[in-house]
Image 1: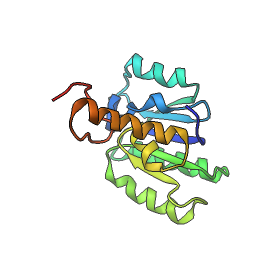
Image 2: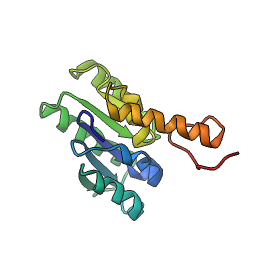
Image 3: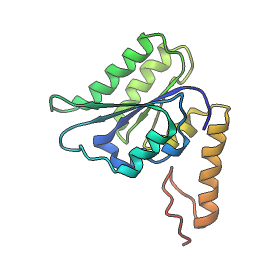
Length: 165
């Protein structure tokens, strides 16, 4: 799937495998960084294979010290590293933790593109939230609409069972 380069920071401790939904929309230009701790260090092979098959860069970042919000600080620090290195595109935080809205607001004021940080609980949701005008975003939106047609119900984010009601 082609589109503009995007960084995806996965709060795996918070989302687990659900956060990787939408990995089929990743492209070779993307970079996925999965942040995890020893309490949540198993990733389903099929989900990992989707990321690897996309050709996107993959980095695994294991939390070395535990503590309240420690993994969140890793993610916020990585965003600083990315934007501080001159990146001017969109970055995504894949998490259900609404505390990341503060990070999103911080970068909204400082990054070169308005809304440079998107926040959603899945990769696919982040792609749609980035609201870029490209094939990948349109395909992700169409996939969600197709799920509505198959399941016959409104679907929250990337949650689709593929079964009719």
